[in-house]
Amino acid sequence: MTILSADNVSYAFPGGIPALSNLSLSVEKGRRLAVLGPNGAGKTTLFLHLNGTLKPNAGRVTVAGKPGDYTRRGLNDWRRRVGLVMQDADDQLFAATVFEDVSFGPLNLGLSEAEARERVEEALAALRITDLKDRPTHRLSGGQKKRVAIAGAIAMRPEVLLLDEPTAGLDHPGSAHLVALLERLSAGGMTLVFSTHEVDLALRLADEVALFSSGSVIAHGPAEAVLADKDLLAAAHLRPPLLVEVCLKARELGLLGSGTPLPRDPSQLLQLMDRWVKERASAS
Image (cartoon, rainbow, N blue to C red; front, side, top):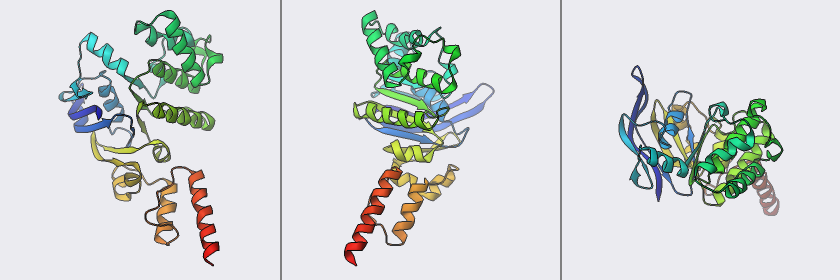
């Protein structure tokens, strides 16, 4: 089921600067879609269309099969269903303290104070920032601000969560924790769409990959297939993840069967290597 789509969307910024050109992209319910492309390809602009912040000059955005409703009531419902976390958390944080900031969305849903508090505490715990709940937002580090912005989005419990460069500003442990959290949210039924420059993150997390170039989608398909296509990736100024390149070479050398799924992270590659060594040992 398509839960969110852009249909032949075109958009230009004031002054006629083109951003999206006849772009079409569908997001399937429950899937994890990575949007990859160079700076200026239109990824952020697309996200601002997918949550109703921007309105297309041509084409349309649909939510659960219905055209996006740009009335005040329609936008409130739209943003309740489709959450957005921007790359720069400073664009989203505005309340005096962390707790107040994360509370803003749930309270605007009309929840009781007790229900809103429960959601906020759950979101803060999920991002491991409960100890920051009383801290002024202007006294947070960049990584802390990013986690607060994500907490504010998931406290709304959206059906679809859009994340623009979700690991930007996070150190390695913070990134690993966020990926694990997103996997849990996905397992709970949330649809995830994230933009990234990191092909390794796309391989680790995505079911599907859409490649962007010059405001258009140039490829959209299963993550393993798209991320193994060197020509497609080159058109988006990218190259395959290192894990994929290693395994494609192993296939060429006959060390890995053509039907063996490509590993999504280093631990899976190590498991493949162990299995290959054992098979070789038993055959000799």
